[in-house]
Structure formats: structure tokens, C-alpha cells
Length: 298
Image 1 (cartoon, rainbow, N blue to C red):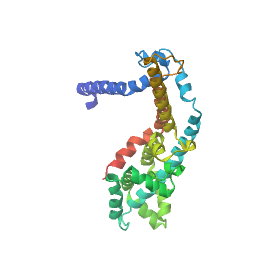
Image 2 (cartoon, one colour):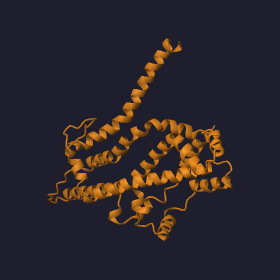
Image 3 (cartoon, rainbow, N blue to C red):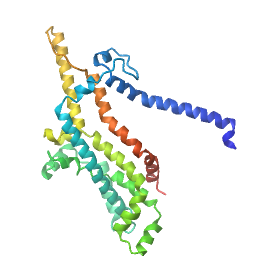
Image 4 (cartoon, rainbow, N blue to C red):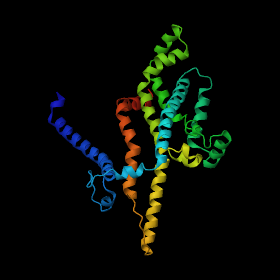
């Protein structure tokens, strides 16, 4: 067999070596960040931290979670991720199903209407004015409604739906099934791979977003986790600059920070990335299959 040839074995060895190098290149930076997050902050300033903490401590995480606002913002973010992902997935799937129907009246005009905003937008100021007139400022719905529909995701789902044999829908129609029954009993179960892929995209987008809070929310009760963590980082940087200025001017200061900005940033990265890392293994088996089929039109 060709798999037992010398050339194939050499190729396999080099393939494993290349993949090992890629894994090291990808994993090392994150392990370095985790090591800094778990290392004593003053010791981290000295440098030399690789993939394990030299002086292990949880002080960086304690300093990060010392903000009382953090717990409330974490709850807001979790609610946003769960509700926002379900709502966005529902809207995008229904839109994709409608656009996948060959007999949809005006389908080309709908596609053109959705494509134009992908390349042109009004900018931040018109967006702010629009949200103000719609009553979305300082409203939790600002996290859910504006980003509920993504034409890019809808196209990916629509392309995947086109890979489902049309004979299934035709047989169901002959048996008396309507569009809702076909959608829920045939199309939806067969679209699980692509829906899992889009779920990951949407969830990560909701989880990482902090600019929406920055631009459109001023109520602390509606702050999201990423926005609060950004404030923690900026406040720590401000205090550090005050200390540096005091030292340069020869002033005495008894300010004793529990951590440094570098260590705090490392702890922040671990906090915001860990949930996604834990979520990905459950969706990974669908990810490659879904995005491959959904991105290629036969």
C-alpha cells in the first residue's frame, strides 16, 4: 500500500513536527499570560516568566474581583450572551431559511438590500442618534436588538441549507407539511453543525464586546464584564502614573498596590478567555464540518 512507502513515512514525520511547532507557537503565549496572572506581581516585573509562575499567588485575581461592580457586570454579560445568542441565532436562521426558498418573491432585491450595509454605514453619530430615538440608550435591549441580524451569518446558514436535498422538503409537502413543520422537523435538525458554528461566533461576539457599553450605556447597573475590566485596568494605570510622578518629584507616598498593571492585564485575559476555551470543546466537532460545508456552494 502507498501508506507504507518510505516517502509517506517521511511526510508523516515532518507533518507531525510542523504541527508540533504550530501548537507550541499558539499555546506558549497563552501559557505565558496564565503564568503571569498566577505569579506575584512584583516578581513579574523582574521578567523571566515563561510558562509557569515563579512565585504562585492568587493576589492578582483577588485584586481583579475586589471591585463590587464586577459580579453585577458578570451577571449582565452572562444574561446577554445566553439571551443574545439564542435571539440572534433564531433571527439569522429564519432569515436564512426564507432566503433559501427559490420561489421567494423579490429574493434578489432582499439580497441587495442586505448586502449594501455590509460595505456602507452611517457612522457612530447617526447610530447614536438612531438609538436615542428608539429608546435604546441605557436599555439592556441595546445589547440584543442592533446585532441580532448578521447577513454574513445568514448567508453561511443559507448556503448550508442549499446542501440539504430538496427532495426531503418536496416529500414533506406532498404529505401535507407546511413551512413551519418543514423548518422545525427537517431543516433545523439537519442544520445542527452550521448552527453550532454560528452559535460560537455570536457568543464570542457578545462576550468580547465592550464598545456598546462605552458608547450607549451610562448606568452602572447595565455595565458588562469586559467594560468593567477595562475600567479596572485604566484605574490601575492611573494610580501607577500618580506613584511614578510622586517619586519623580521626590514626594513621599505610602500607596501600596496589591498588583501591577501587567499582572492585572494577564489576570483579565485569563478571566475573559477561559469561558470561551471551556465552551469550544463542546462545539469543536461541529465547527470544521459546519464552516466547510456552509462556505462552499455546490
